[in-house]
Image (tube, rainbow, N blue to C red; front, top):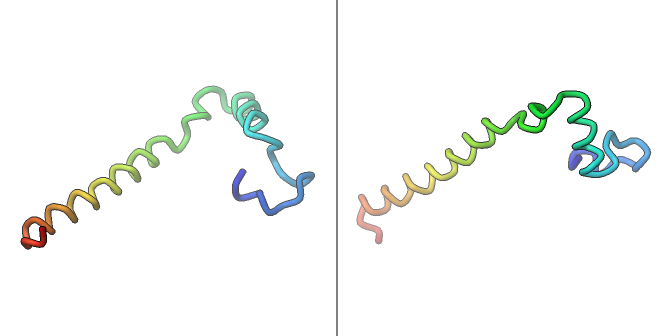
Length: 64
């Protein structure tokens, strides 16, 4: 929906968040609501690991 925000309203694929959820459920079922969940979890884990490694490196180099 965010990628289409610059298009005129009549050219957008979804009218609202509820419309989007309704169409996804109709086309793909409940599993369609979770597509992309695992990559998003891994992205979040990667961000956390960057912060942890930065903190460990800072402690190792004595830059408290």
